[in-house]
Image 1: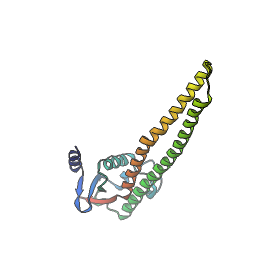
Image 2: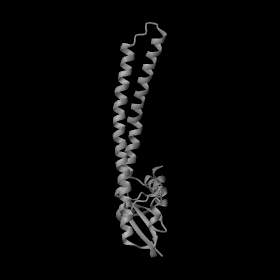
Image 3: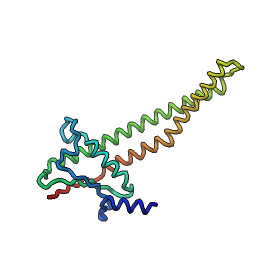
Image 4: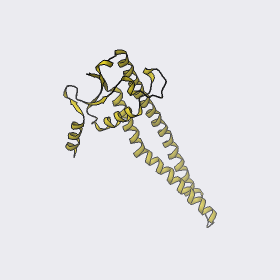
Length: 190
């Protein structure tokens, strides 16, 4: 199965042996094609177009983490402009640096939520087990069961975040960091 996946990746992306890198190739008509049209900021600070970003993300997700990536931007020879190349490079780096910072903030928020969920679940379970004596009163039975259910729900949320959501944050952060350090190569064609 693994050999089949690598073979498919090699068919889809060109491999450069010298740099141990797969090329994510994108054809553009102009430098402006990678920028979000709705963003009025100067080019160096503009956001990347969603479609461009989605293509880069899905392509980067295919490429094994042991390999480097090169973002190869193909442009017409007549459009060659060194200043615009620098602006695209800066915009690309700014965009993925922002994405890394956003993921790190999300990661920090997840840790805070996890601490709250764990402590609150333990409090509810402890209350339900030790302090809510029902003595056959139906109203107190409902409150005790609700307390147990709430405790288990918060504990489940904690467990889900620790074993599933945390992993998603880690893989997203790793992917953004790989993209941030990836080389951008401008290729001009006639």
